[in-house]
Image (cartoon, rainbow, N blue to C red; front, top):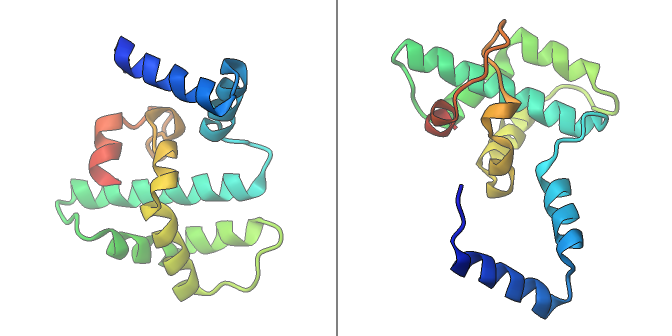
Length: 139
């Protein structure tokens, strides 16, 4: 993504106006854009995103890609999801309706869109990255 001088100037003016140093701004952006692998809540979020994308890919290949909520329901109903849910500490008894609601809210939250990047996802049972164009289409 290339920025033009006008956009850069606008950013620098904002940082100057708000009293934010460029290094501080860089640290904020890095923190916001980086996935913390040691945080189990973040790891669980990314696991759910991965399961969701895999489900959407299966549906797309079968030419039955429908509403996101239907894909979410299918993901949460799987034994794999339920088994993985139990692995994370601090979670209460599994409630499918609540999990569907929470995953739907998470996937549709604009603050989470930054995590739907090619570098974060691979095809199921491979190490091949899912292309960004496909992620954008299926998300």
